[in-house]
Image (tube, rainbow, N blue to C red):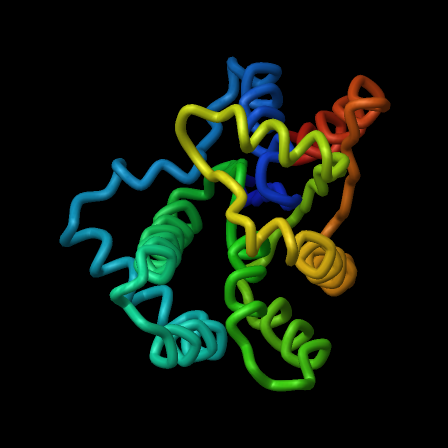
Length: 216
C-alpha cells in the first residue's frame, strides 16, 4: 500500500543541507521523489491547501501565527520566513494527499529555529517541546554536522544564498544548541541519522537503507 514518507534535513546554515539532499536524490534518481518546490502549486491551490493545513494542524499553525503577529513585517527576514511557512504548509497537504516520498533540504524542524529565537518566553525548553510535537510528522530527520569554521567560510564564499551576519556569527553557538534541542525532541517520534564529511559514505548508506524501507 502506498504511503507517505517524509525526510527533512537540519543543521546550521551552510552546513551542507542542500548538497546532501541533491546527493541522495541522485541515488534514487529512478524513483519519484518530491521536494520543497514551491512552484508546483498555483496560487488558488496554495490557498486551498493552506486552509486544509491550518484545520488539520491547528495547534502548530496558531503557534506560528502568534510568532508572526509579534514581529515587524517591514523586515525582510520576517517576510521570508512567513513565505516559507505558507508554501511549506500548502505543499505538506498536497504531498499527503498524493502519498509522496518527500525529501526536503529544509523543513518545519529547521524553520523552528527562527520561531524559537523569536520566542521571548523564558521557558524555551517547554516551548520547543510543544512546538516540535505539534508539527507534522517527519519519518527521518537527517542532522548535518559540520564545523563552525567550515560553515562560516562556505557562507562567506557564496555568490548567492544565505550569508552569516555579524550578529548571527555571535549567536552561532546558541543557535547550534537550539538545533540540537530540536533534534532531541524530534527523536521521540522520528528516526534520526547524523551525517558528517568524515563518515559521509557510511552515513549515506544508513540514510539510503532507511529510505528504501519506504518502498518495501
